[in-house]
Image (cartoon, rainbow, N blue to C red; front, side):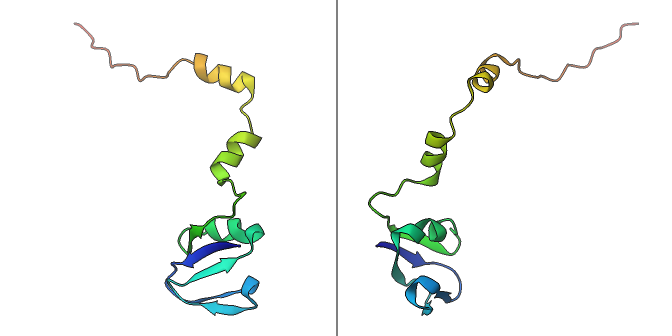
Length: 91
């Protein structure tokens, strides 16, 4: 079981705990499979103890969605856009 802390401004009801009301700053255990549903709400919940096999979402996205080779090459070779300096007219 994973552990999370309620950091939101008011108590909330947690279905995984049988509909129990959790108070602000209270630490509760939640099922490992539901851990992501809590930590994706950073203004309401904070992680106290992650599941053993949990991988942060940023790492998962990098592992499962590799950049296409053509797009990676375009990033390396694309010219940088710069604003042209105003030209002075002589006369």
